[in-house]
Image 1 (cartoon, rainbow, N blue to C red):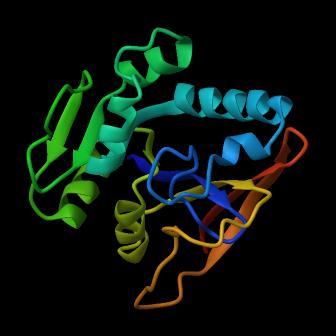
Image 2: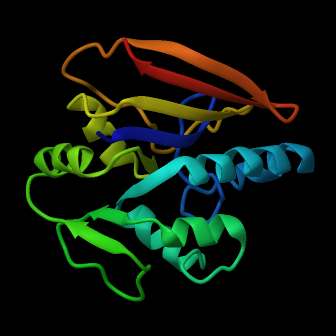
Length: 191
């Protein structure tokens, strides 16, 4: 059975929006706030995660973000791994523009589709970005693990990972590591 893993870059104040500074938030890139060593160590963690992953799950906007930044055509080991993985996209409309190999749009009830996907995939199904999707999965208790790469900054505005929930969602810390000199990787599972 598959496990849904939400893997996010997040600020100390919980912001997940526009970490690269490419969007409309106007707060700049978080990556310029960390050292080259931090970025190298971050990349190692991300590549290792990709190698353990069996499938990717995206919201439509995040999927298009990856495609627009060349992940579908890059040739490095990390991009090649992501390209080889099955990709599932939650979208109520057809995907527009160029695509990414091995991509499937999930249609119908999101909760039912993702629950079914967990039965079809054996291993980790990783969700990158996709804030609205991640919040819905959390709300419906479909997330098996949260991996939060925490950046040492307060963004002060933007979309946050956690929004309102109908109930308290208890978590337990199962791992914490310092990545580079200033990043913290916090791993939680439902309690």
